[in-house]
Length: 117
Length: 108
Image (cartoon, rainbow over all chains, first blue to last red):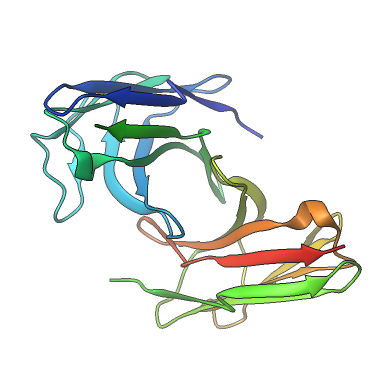
């Protein structure tokens, strides 16, 4: 299957600072990537859809000025959590879509554990 | 929105037993996918289904795309300790939605 990487795998930051998380598709090009948030023992919640070369599409209730998404190339999308607060502490997971005639699959990165102190 | 109902929420089984879990929806999906997530990791794709009625196997795992396109099941045969984890179904139409997950515990 396709490989998606994330960096960093975990980060601890102080309240009020910003944190950038990178998501890369290693062996394929992804015009569309997705950012999810997952709280303990819960399912994945879609935050936004990242489209290469255009603005991200945010889900209802997700602040686009707080969670900045940049999809600068076909293999890289970044999520920046601005002015982080303790309630932003969570597991952030990206995924990249691989689609072709008759197929649609999403491959996930390993996730980034963010802790805001 | 498109809601997926995944059941059971959790399962506690003995090693060697078979497992079955399913997802249902009131909406039709074009694709059903099943993922497994280990603690602290991202979900890993197990099986993807594209046609109504399709039955696909991946080792000890078997999944089916329901005829009505509104449901799917995943079976695991002869469970082993490393099957422990959370299994998520996902349905895709315009975007992809996830079930709440089935937490599987396998007792040796």
